[in-house]
Image (cartoon, rainbow, N blue to C red; front, side):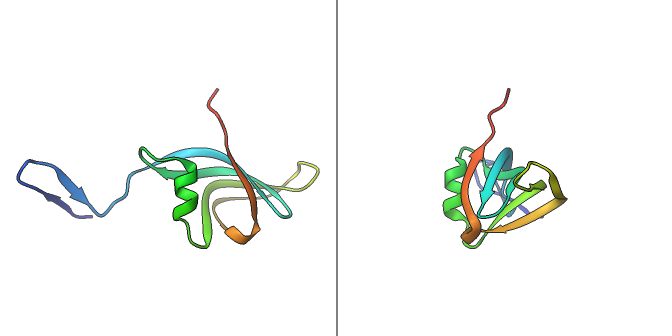
Length: 92
């Protein structure tokens, strides 16, 4: 990781800071609960618009139609062509 500073002391880095957002993703066949990572001061909608082919989720669980967990994994890439809707979960 590299840091660069300008004359005013502002720093620049190649690391993009993101905030974890719990979300529910409905695909054409399954429901997925996991964590999306959204750039600071942006919305989930902005992250979806930036994504080209895959939606990245961490700590993902895939559910069947009856609500049973089929799979869990620390990382899951979902093809956007399979996504029906995305719902950010609200904090309680």
